[in-house]
Image 1 (tube, rainbow, N blue to C red):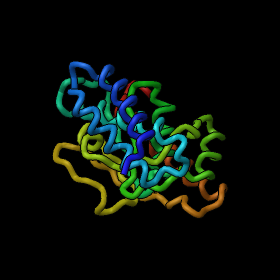
Image 2: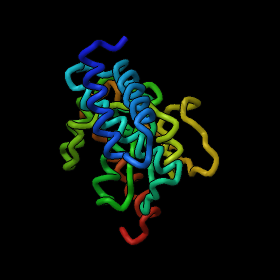
Image 3: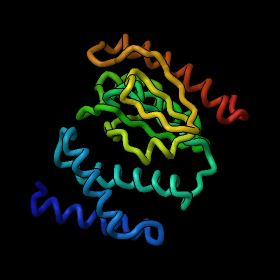
Image 4: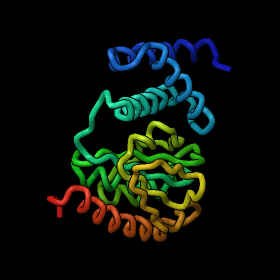
Length: 209
């Protein structure tokens, strides 16, 4: 049940997003997405203090994806979604690396079939080594509109929990799970992902080689 102070925060978030998505979605739709996003993140968010900020970011991402699905907003770059189980390791590394290399020429999202409360600290460490900052990222649940907005869905060990949508290109990357592993092993996984991401980018944006 939402506490009174939480309801006030959510109303404030919805008010701001309703302005940003004015003419695209009704106030009621925005409010629903904000409340849903708050509930979904509330199941996993470790630090409640940051939950309103994360809720705003998650709801904004979902609304943006829905606008694409409905054809209200047309993306002029490929859309890639990385999905793993916890959205705390492999998918976060892949999304961070692709965004880093693409420089805006690919739009990247990531999600988890069963997200946890924080990104693996070893993952954050090894990504810092290559100039990718994941400290502001957070595990997010996989939602329908985000999957439907993607052109390419890259799955990483989530098995049957990953959605199948017609017309999407699917890639399944067999990668070790960094959960519970030390920095040295996670670094090896990162380097494997790095090679795959570079190859995918070269396919999606052939001019980058």
